[in-house]
Amino acid sequence: MAKKVVATLKTSTGKDWAKVIRAVKNPQTGAYTFKTEMMTAEMVKETFK
Image (cartoon, rainbow, N blue to C red):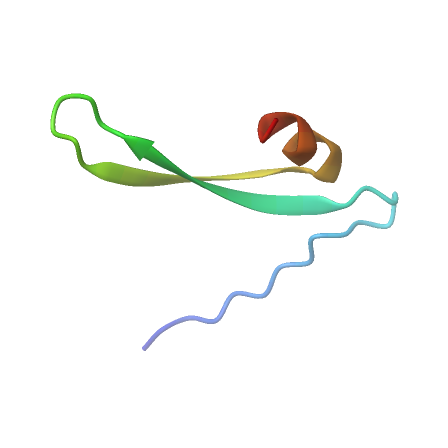
């Protein structure tokens, strides 16, 4: 049976958090893998410039 996970991405300190999922291509095989990261909303804007 699957487990349901509920996460709050906003803390009481006022920082907004976002979950970023990136597709990274392996140069040897050409296959894509997905990496997930939790970062603040400000860092998301800088990451996708």
